[in-house]
Image (cartoon, rainbow, N blue to C red; front, side, top):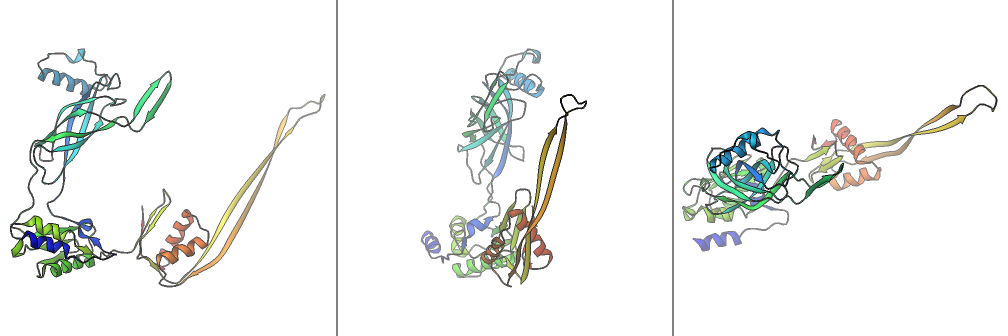
Length: 361
């Protein structure tokens, strides 16, 4: 059976324009889980929270009481301590003893987490159960220094990381059932792509075990030779080469002036006229002074000259069925800027000449 799985993977067709199914989809239930915890970072050399952060004071007092030290909140100064939130992801099929990288983020008014040490923090999932314990020295990859009215900062000093700072204490829930059909979920649902995935799986397994349930879901019944061995089946399926399909789309971000066009973008025959409007203002100030013995005051005369010119670049005709490359070359020939190109694409879409979805962010 293992040899059959290997031959299944090696026998996959390879296409220069195809993409592995691993990049296009995921298997239902095989996902990471977010973990979050609240903790304290100590040893901050005066860069921690100040006394106005009352939750930090209460947290430190509670921690010291659990350690057998009875202290009043009024006696605590927390300038060397910072309250933080600790976040990470629990990988699917993770087991106790494995380590996780964690992110430590200040929740109070600490100036920096540089040189701090995170005390043991319980990390919980959405079900409220503890899955990992975190502790270790925080690395921020920057600094924040100041004094004498000046201050300098590199990177973000109130957020740090601890590589391998959490140890898994509870196994992640197992979600891959060896007796139930596999469910493949496309990242971008599409009828054509879903049908191609099911067809490709059936062709490579030699039987009709896969069917597209909807544009984003494909069900795969475990073949007889893979019953009880879902890992081998998944290893073969996720390496299948799929020719994906997608709706032609143009993405426009007017705030940044970014335009992204897919390869499937086509246009109908259209004529485009583009002109640049130039506004020029020239100001000339002249100082007028009265004579030596004349009564009067010094005055300033302002003469402003405003000139408006329009530089026409003519009319460009783009024929029907033009590809993305031809569209870009034709528009560049007009000398248009990114901002002007956005306006042209919007006008082409309104005129019905742009055969693609226009999405403005």
